[in-house]
Length: 333
Image (cartoon, rainbow, N blue to C red; front, top):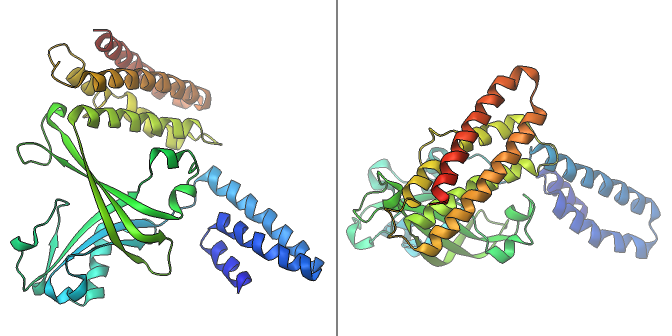
């Protein structure tokens, strides 16, 4: 049974979990003095670690994606009003998952309504004779202390029971604001009854927490996310221009909406002094760190660029130099 499980784990590319099973299997063979099988195990373990290094370097391994589904309607019986997290194969699109779910519940189109927004739903506002599905893409969520231990891509996609989705909003009731200064965000953190992966692809949500993010906190997160994306490329075992350049271009291009320069202009000018000053100071620090990481990314791009890519690199440098000059001037105000 254990050998069969190892075979399936390898097929699922869960190589790290495979190693844990070998740790259980090897002592059994040792007690039985089955040296041939021990030799085979150690050879297989060697190949497992080669595979781990390979997928970490080339980024070819994709993990499952997750959707939060809220069910409303008397036909759902005991599931009426409950929320679940569904695990789906990698790259499953929202439309594809919605169609699959509709077929699973065997509901006629006239009886089914899809709630497209991710806001809180009041069941009293719904038609009790119809069935409603509210479907939202979610991603695994970790506390800051957990991230110190979950450092690899595998760590962040295995043994998980917390998920998050974000809902943009404004005080006027719209989803998106014309200015970053009015753009709020609501984070919803969901906890499931048990951990994924599980024998079932659906686990019930047992608790929910919502956190409201102010415009300046939202801007700070955007800058930190851009910095993290660049650091991920820089810290890769095999830096790749095909993945580095799009991230770098998105960081230093001034024309990008809600980009670093627009954020600096919105929150760091003296006229806008009604924001929390502690958050403003954190934003200044984050922008300085972002510029430093951009410089390192440009140096890496310069190192990796072939002669026929030099013109593009110079364009990136020009964009960065302008961005740096403008942002530092705002930081120093």
